[in-house]
Structure formats: C-alpha cells, structure tokens
Length: 83
Image (cartoon, rainbow, N blue to C red; front, side, top):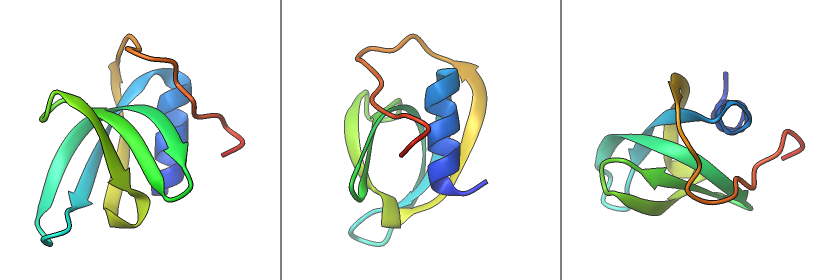
C-alpha cells in the first residue's frame, strides 16, 4: 500500500498511521500519527511523539502503514477517499 492509500484508509477507519519521515536535515524518524488532513503536498497529523498537530511533506514520508489502533478524533478529519 502506498503512502496516500495508507493515510486515506487509516482516516476512514479512524486508525493511527506509522510513518517513517525524513526531516529537512536528512534525519529519519518513525512517528505514530492520527490522520487529519491531506492538502496539496502536505499531510497534517497529530504526532504522538511531539504531542501536537504536525505538517509532514508527502515527498518526505518514506513509508506509511495503517495501524490497527483506533483513536477518537480531536478535530474533524478532512480526508476522503476521493483525495
């Protein structure tokens, strides 16, 4: 499953998404996120590691996996299957 498909499916199912993300300095980290929005080239998710909503560049997400863990949305989820 590709990055976009994993995020869209997780949003639909209210599941968390684990991403591997390369930051601007080139460092790779693994983040557990709650999916909230896809906007142009960005993914907005609540990052459990940082404890806040974060903007991730889609091009910098190396891998995304839908987790079986469900979450109660903190905000409206603005991701649809038509993304």
